[in-house]
Length: 289
Image 1: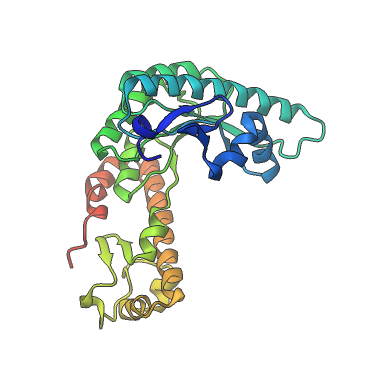
Image 2: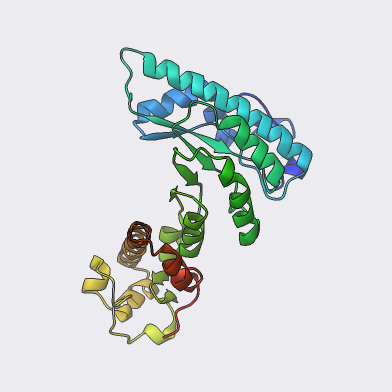
């Protein structure tokens, strides 16, 4: 499944991905719901935002496949919009305040991305996402695609960059007009000992932290930094204690929340350019201590 051009023969209108004539067992049940069924399931789950059905393809993929995939994603969005409206019109609607976001696709082809955004921008969506990035392409290519798509996104609606990213990715995304993000990175990296600080990243498993009495970040007010030392956290990780992962995840999530708060403050105060110069790049590099 990692190579669309070699293994994926087609993705049909119901959302089934066929490989060598067989439907993947792991997604067959979900795909059988069809677009409308997934929309209803999302409403019943009570989510605040429903993301339209789309196909996230590998980068790079053949242009012909990308074009066909985008056409399919557009048809799915039309069906999602219609079903979302139908559900919200029901007198017993279970989630009347749910928002629907459309997803821009197009791989790393700027012209396909722009054309797709132009087509879906007039649709009745509450916001729009840029999907299919941070899946193997170089970081600068991701930034270039955002630059290409953003001018075609409705200015009055939220912009969401899916699956991104590092602290520097977030700062650079905001600089390009993105409003919000999601990513497993802070939690996943934390579980492996990679922690974020305002001086850069640290690998808490390194030997140099064995007797380090300092908190992860001396400026951080998270519970882990207020109560525990680097040496203790390193001990927990090397001993395989689950508490280590909990504390590390707690710290990284707190750092990301603080990052977003500082970005908002910098935007409000008109100092974002200075903030970007100071921290974009720095936060992704190993801390120099």
